[in-house]
Image (tube, rainbow, N blue to C red; front, side, top):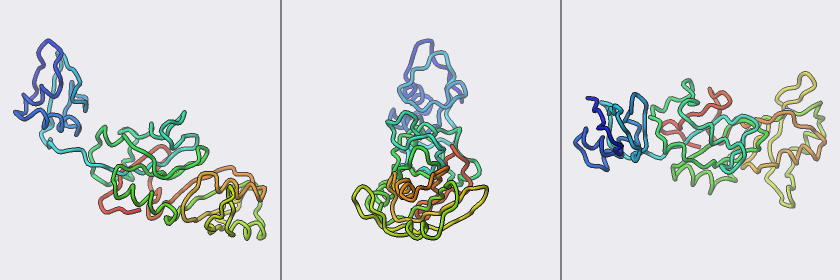
Length: 250
């Protein structure tokens, strides 16, 4: 049943504790889990002050800690994967941009889910798949095994790519004085003066592909990462995200 708040500012957690006959900590868990509404709007900050407003607790509410999650985002071109950037992709992670088509996790969004760090950096000008995670298992996999996980990137370049250039792109490059693991590079399409190149490589170093193509005097007109390990972009439009589903692995 809704409870009317007395005419003076009161902490939301106190109101919920009274209405649910529970401890203050349980009330905080209800609030942080997104189970509490103030005047019909979800408020997930326990310390929020309310005054002359109606507070309701979802009838299916459970007082459990918010579980760490992993999020897959289709980053549009122009956004940066580091949180301190001028246009961080992190700002795209909000309930309204969650993909209804691609997300089949059944997870209820919570504010803490969006306090994330990107574990798969991508060039600002590039678009495509990036992964954010709070799950220690996923974080460990993407950091400790970073050089073993295959990344698939589609790069459009202007003009034709000859056999000799393609052969050189498949050799182990030297980037910033460091010998890199060779990528598997193939032509995926050719049309309207543009050649699509498919790069499949273990690990992803920001700037590596650009340096390889610059050495061949090939101008990039578009770059999109479509896969990291076993995770792909299926169903995600640019700017949309989804949760990892149960049992999903990198």
